[in-house]
Image 1 (tube, rainbow, N blue to C red):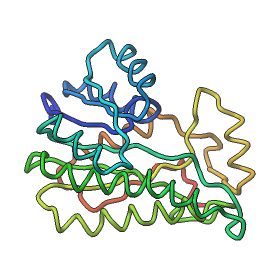
Image 2 (image 1 turned 135 degrees about the horizontal axis):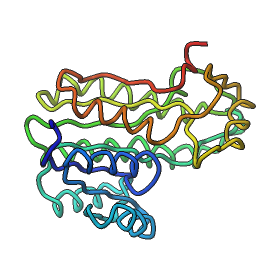
Image 3 (image 1 turned 45 degrees about the horizontal axis):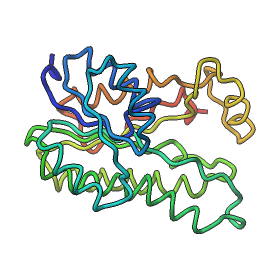
Length: 235
C-alpha cells in the first residue's frame, strides 16, 4: 500500500473529482487534507467523508493565502490540485480580457502558487499532480482562453519535472466530465461545441480520480500529462 499513512493535500477536494479522489485515498489508508474556497462545500464534504479528513479554507489565487496555508498545515507527502474556474466560453474576438485574467489567476496562477510554496513542505520522495484539460490539444468553439490556461499548466509541469526532482510532478488532462449522474444536458452542450467522444458519454468524477491515484502511486512518472477523455482526442 504505497499511499498508506501518507499525508496528501487536495486543493479543490470538496466536490467533484477532488472529493471522489479523497474517498479513494481514504480507502488506501492515506491521511487527507482538503482545501477549498467554499466553507459550505468543505463542511458538506467532511460530513460525507465521515469526518475522516482535515479541512481548510483557501483561495489559491491569493499568494499570501497560499503561504499562510502551508505554514498552517506543515509537512506532507503529496499535493493534488483539482481547482478550476468556470469555462471561458466566448468567441475570441468578443472575449472579455478581465474574465480571462481572472480565470488565469484561479487555475494557472493558483496552481503555480501551490507548487512554488508547497515545495517547502513536501517530502523528498513526494509528488505533485496538477490539472489541465483537453482544450489544450483541440479547438472547441469559444475555448481559446481555457486552451491557453491548460497549455500553460502542461508546459509548467514539463519544465519543473527536471528542476524539482526528486519530487515528481505530473498533470491529469480530463475530457468532459459530468456534474451529476446521467448529465445529458452537459453531454448535449459539449456536442454542440464539436465534441464527439467515441464512447458517447461523459466521464465520471470517480473515473477521472483514478487517474490522479495512478500518478500518485507510480514512482516512475514525472513530467507526464495523463489524458482521460473517452477517446475524444482520437477522433
